[in-house]
Each structure stands twice: as structure tokens, then as C-alpha cells.
Image (cartoon, rainbow, N blue to C red):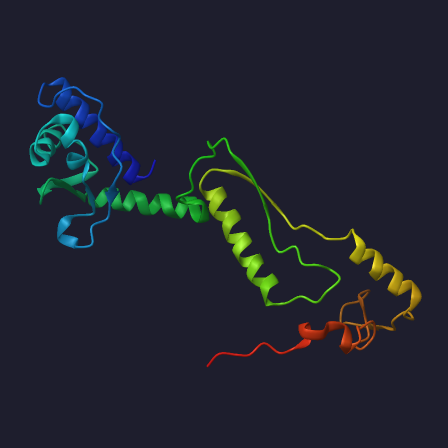
Amino acid sequence: MEVREELKEIIEKAKDAAVAAGELPEGDYAPVQRLEVPKEKEFGDYSTNAAMQWARTAHKAPRQIAAAVVKHIDTPLVTRMDIAGAGFINFFLARDTVYQELKNILAAGPSYGDLPKTQKDRFLVEYVSANPTGPLHIGHARGAAYGSALVNLLRAAGYDVFSEYYVNDAGNQIDHLAESINARPVPPAERYGCGNPGRWLPRPGHHRHRPAYHGKGRQEIPGHG
């Protein structure tokens, strides 16, 4: 479990202990929503506004709630806790905690931070889907990058994702392409070696479409600068 999630559980248990001790009233307390890295280093490694979040339920000032919660936190994960401002609780991590988290990051590799696959929703992401009857363009490359990134994000969030490149190999366009090839057959291309034994490629210049076929697709894309 990541340090952030462990601290959230610790805060929840401390709040429950404060309620059991009569220091906070019973009520429907919402789960801890925010545990963030402060912008300023003097505010610790993590900070939460949970006490302000629970003020309406507890009918107490956030600083009073924070004091009751901190009183019941005893963990080797942190070396110090401060109550700041209107009722923020700031946590300063122990050095061993930081070292252990670094080990977890190295052990997990690229999967560090991924959520467990507990989501029930399944996704089918179709992207690129370049029409084989026309030339490729920059939009296809952009769609490939966006689609691949979206698939990776959904998987990291714990969803079951199936990615698909839709091949448009049916319909009137393909029929017209086949009829065109049959009507104007192209002689077989000559073969030449490409440097690897047993590997052959068509000689450049063969099987190319006529310039007029590409139309706007052959126009140069203006650069920036």
C-alpha cells in the first residue's frame, strides 16, 4: 500500500478512536478526501483538510477536531504532526518511510501507482483507424498518440481495456479500389536485396500511386518557426 493511502487509513482510525473516546460526537463522517503534498516545504510532506471536512458533522471548530484526531495517531510513518491555519493537519514523514517508498517504486517499475483492477466497467478504445484507400497524414499519428495514452491511463486506473485498430477493409471504397486494380493491373515489382539474406523489398518507384491520386494529401505541411 502506498504511503498516502496508509496515512488516510491512519487518519480514519484516529477519528474513530476520538469518537469512541467521546472526544468527537458520533455521526456520518465522510471518508478522507484530500491528502496532498503542500506547496511550501515547512508545511510537511503531506497535509489534509479532513478536520474542516468533518466540522459540520462534529459541530466543532476544525482545529478542535484536528487536535482530537492527532491525539490518537501513533505511527512510525511520521516523525511529527502539526496543526496549522484553520485546521490543516501536516505530516512530516520519517526517513525510513521515504526510503521504503523509494524501494517500492524501484520494485514496481512502470506499474508504480497503478490502481488494482477492481473496476467493473470495461472499455473498448478504437483509435487511428486510417482508411487504407487514402494516404496517411499527421492526424492519424496524433490519433495514435492520443488513443494509446488513453488506453494506458484507463488501465492504470484499474479498468479492463481492449484497444483496437479498426481496419476499414470493407465497403464501397474497397470495392472501387479492387475494381480499379483489376481494370489497370500493375506488373509485378522487381525485387532487390535489402541487406539481410532472404529478405527482399520492391525496387523504389514501383507500385506507387500517380501524383494526381493523392491530391491534397501530397501537399506539404507548413512548419512552425
